[in-house]
Length: 255
Image 1 (spheres, rainbow, N blue to C red):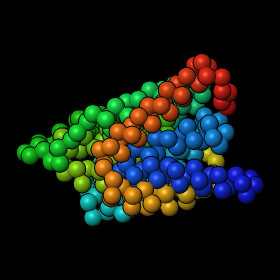
Image 2 (cartoon, rainbow, N blue to C red; image 1 turned 120 degrees about the vertical axis):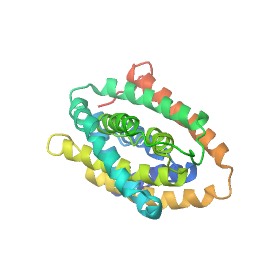
Image 3 (cartoon, rainbow, N blue to C red; image 1 turned 30 degrees about the horizontal axis):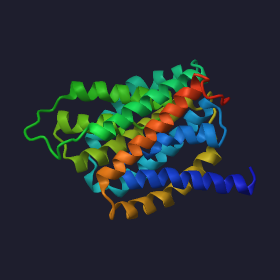
């Protein structure tokens, strides 16, 4: 890898981190398209590399908010994710790159929809613990993490708020911890039989660390809902591009 590629990877990472810091979540969902379309990785390698980046971003996030993380509940939810995580990681290796991209495009649309229309209360008063709901969401989240290399915090945050009565502050911080646990398990499931571009992942995370801090600084002076709307529309556009390329309507060859 030459110097220009290293610098480009740092810039791509900074863009991912900036989106994450600016919107407060969701930035990691553009990691896979960046790896496939801009860096030129194969889809399967990009999923593994994305797990490293997403896990790193999640670790950075929950450590920064560690006083709000409920580690006991988060660890339980993360371990419940193993139910879906391991089969998701194994199944991904037997699915074509085009189909994975098409499914990822669908996930981007669902994520964007959640950003646009779901408004959660800060706290659900008197919520009774509903661990079955959390177990189902945890298993689905684990599957998505292993299968597509995504975080899926938009799934676990509502589950923690409505099923366990977490405040939004606790739910967001704990969700990052759950995502970190899921990515570690998914990486363990892939170790030795799935490709991961570790150097690229480190560069993206290094750039993302700086971009995240810059994005968070800008976010303080801008309208948060407007930012979420703009980013959701951007995610839809990238999702549409990804889906159309997977269907070969846009003539771009992916590995």
